[in-house]
Image (cartoon, rainbow over all chains, first blue to last red; front, side):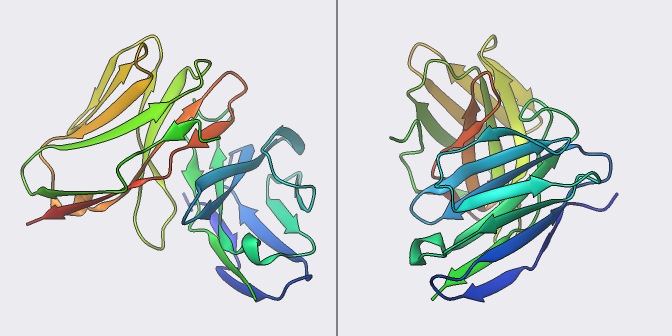
Length: 114
Length: 111
């Protein structure tokens, strides 16, 4: 089975722009979660989608949004980018309900905001 | 407010010896705990988990211990191998399933 794929792998944007990141889960997995990893903060939970519905949300401003499509693929969007949004964005999929169903992570998208 | 803390940012250990990674949490509602390993340029990989109804769980060379009264968990790797060199994250979840991660501990296993 193919693993979790994320595109693009690297992205450079400037302040004020917006960005869309994409995640394709493992085939058959219905849950997709997004995390932000920064050197000082570790991994922080952004949101989780299950069957196109947002089931959980972390403590991030409304500039961070996401959605899930009927084929379980997910996108996250960050509007009005700030320098502090520079991070590795990780997507994870699981069969049903994380974390008791194991989450499988993609390699991440490295976003740099200049 | 960091609800899950890994106070040691790094750990160096000789091959064949035991690696002990520690993690403290503050939220008494956490009832499920996990450890992940991360290599550079890869996403985290699930290692082992433990439910709050247990105090120990073993999987091969990896054992996780949970001390609920101290709100402390630890991961033991015995014996340590050079391929274990990575960043290790502990994570915790309460009902509702949102995962809270610690800041990570970088482990270096010297041959």
